[in-house]
Structure formats: structure tokens, C-alpha cells
Image 1 (spheres, rainbow, N blue to C red):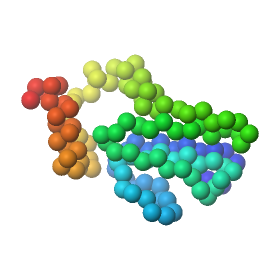
Image 2 (tube, helix red, strand yellow; image 1 turned 60 degrees about the horizontal axis):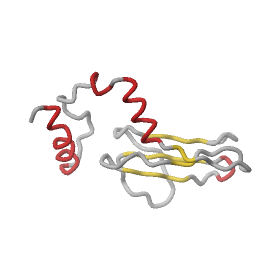
Image 3 (cartoon, helix red, strand yellow; image 1 turned 45 degrees about the vertical axis):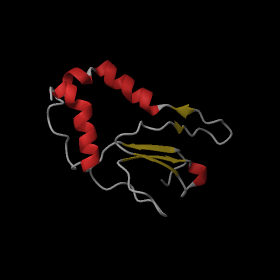
Image 4 (cartoon, one colour; image 1 turned 90 degrees about the vertical axis):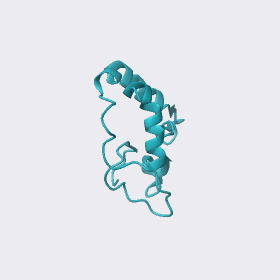
Length: 118
């Protein structure tokens, strides 16, 4: 955070303690942080839940350059498709810890029911 580089942190891990943020921050499953070197210590926080698509975020460049928006959901989906994760992941296994909320667990169970044969 003390460098002159811009930082985009993509936190797609539900476990552990998220980066500390100043101010009121709503709990969320996942977070994206966009920190421009010219605006530190302030940063933009994009939070989202398990059932939501990954939001698009601006990619900070030089201050005089227009920031392109990066469609992270499409990128992650493309990586998963090319890597063949649908064939490699055993979706019959329980979701890894931490435990999901009851509502999220019901959503996952309904989503995976055709794969699990339930």
C-alpha cells in the first residue's frame, strides 16, 4: 500500500479475515478492492454475495488515462470453461468451510440437484 502502484485485490475466498477497511462495511461473502496510488488511503470496495455475479470493476492506470472496466465474471467463467472444472470438480462433495448460511445452502443444493442426482 505504500508503493506508487495501483492495486486491485480480488478476494474470492470466504474463509479467513478480510482486509481491514475504515468506515462502515457491510458483511459480504467476497470483496474486490480497487486502490489507486493517487487516492490512498482511500479505495473503492465492491462486495458481493455467493448468489451474485462477480461485479465489473475499473482497472486503474495512469491518472491521465481512462480506466477500462474489466468484466471479471466473464473472465472467471472463461478460465473455468477452458480448464474443464465442470468435469474435474466433484460437486457431490459438501461445500468447503466455512459453513454457508441456511439460505445459501438451500440455493447451492437446488443449483446442484441435477448434478448430484437429487
